[in-house]
Image 1 (cartoon, rainbow, N blue to C red):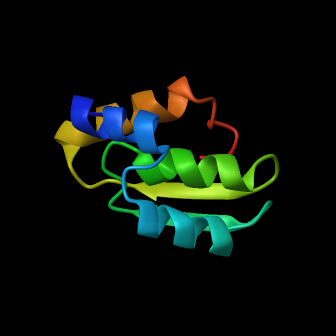
Image 2 (tube, rainbow, N blue to C red):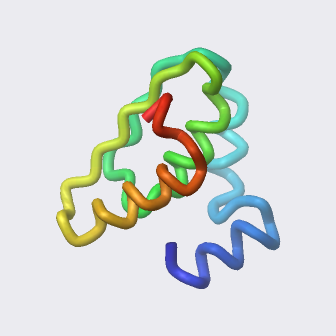
Length: 83
């Protein structure tokens, strides 16, 4: 993730507070969730933590330039069982 997004997530515990709030009220344990246009994995991270341990998360990123960063993010937070 870029430094600005990382800083905002650390300070505010989210980068986009309204969207994060909405997701936290809609997504529950063990759900199946789709993250289309996952980018570097901000919502992949958030949603993956919300659905564990038995949920499934399908993250799609069409940009070959960015997909490596998404894979690194999902590896770094141990979501490989869900993603």
